[in-house]
Amino acid sequence: MIIEKEIRHFHLFCGLGGGAKGFNQGQARVGNLKAKFRCIGGIDVDAPAIRDFERLTGARGTVLDLFDRSQFRDFHGVEPPAGWRESTPDDIRRAAGNERPHIVRRRRARASAACSPRRRARASSTSRSTASPCAAFG
Image (cartoon, rainbow, N blue to C red; front, side):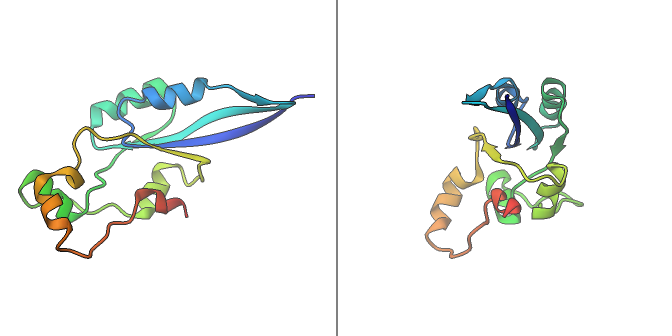
C-alpha cells in the first residue's frame, strides 16, 4: 500500500515560476512512501512575473518588495516612494497562505542591494543585520 505525503514548497524571489513548476512536477518515493509536491505561493517584486508564476504553478503569487529602507536607498539611490513600507514576517506568512512550507526556495536575484558597491562599503561600518525572510516561518 502506497502512503502519499504532501510536501509544501514556497518561493522567495520566485520570478515567473519555473522553479516552482519543477517542484510541482517532482517525484520522490522511498519504499511505500510517495511525496506529492504542492506550491503554496511565491513572492517577487515584478508584477508581470507574478502573473506568469500564478499561471505556471496554479498557486497564488504576491508582489512584495523585500528590501528594508536602507537597502532600497542603497539599490535605487533615492528614498522609497510615498506609501512604500518594509515587508514584515506577517506579509511573508500571508503570501504563503498562512501555511508552513517544508521547503523554502530562494532564487538568487540578478541584482541585490546586498551586492551593491555602496552596501558592501557600508557593511563593515554597521552592526545592523537584516533578518532572513525565511525567519517568517520560524
